[in-house]
Length: 168
Image (cartoon, rainbow, N blue to C red; front, side):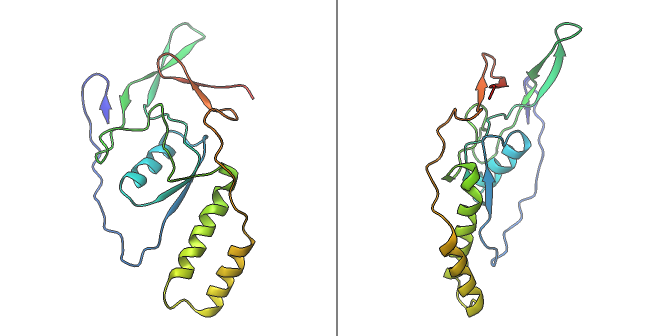
C-alpha cells in the first residue's frame, strides 16, 4: 500500500502452492463489485489462481478518508493506493476486467457450466456423476453479450477520480 504522502507500507502474504488436485476456481464479478472485493478479484487473477466471470468491476482501488469542508459536508479524499506486486499497478478507474465477460445475472450459470465441463474432462469420474453433470449442462442456457460499460447505474468518475452513483 503506497500512501500519497510518499510513505510505503507493505502487507506481506506468504504464497502457498496450490494442491495438485485443486480444481479450477471461478469468481463472479459485477459492476457493483468494488473496494476489497475488487482487490480480492484482482489479486487472484494476477496470480493465475482464479478465472473471473461477469462484468467489469467498479474501479475503486484507492482507499479514502473523509475530510470536512463544512459542518454538514465531508468529502472522501484518497490517502493511499494498492499496488499489486505482480502487475505493479491496480484497478483504479478501469475496474477489474473479467476473463469471461458476461452479464452479472448470467455469471453463475456460465461458471457452473465451466465447472460441469471440467468434471466431464476428468478421468475416473463415476458414471452417475458424469451423467448428472451432462444432464445439468444440457439444461443451462447460453450467455448473452456482456452489458456495455456505463449501462445500468455504472459509477461515473468525477474530476478527482471519485465516484458518484448515477440515478437509476
